[in-house]
Length: 158
Image: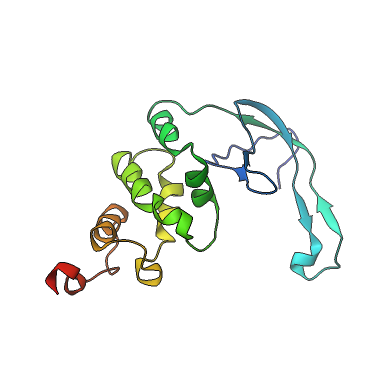
């Protein structure tokens, strides 16, 4: 709970509204008034009953330095949806995984790094079969993971 006259600083990297039409929640730097609404039905309560928070002011700033370089690369509809969404990897998004992995590799100290790592960690090459052996090995290296592929799975060895 936030006490009266206290502030909370939270760095959220990307926030988009996907439906009914894609748009950035905060399209430009500035102050915005926001509130949250929680449907009680999500926790077993009655349908149609909503709890709304108080309105708060949020301050949106433009990325600077290394973050500005990363934002220039990420500020594309498909990248933003993939980073934010907790969905299965779609055909549409398969091509962006290697691109995002390379952004992460090129900018490992960016403030976007946790969001990129989280998004890329959702990708299971074994489950989706969407990445080439080389792309999978590169993603594994960038994320510091082992176990997606084994050397004997390299199609060049068959």
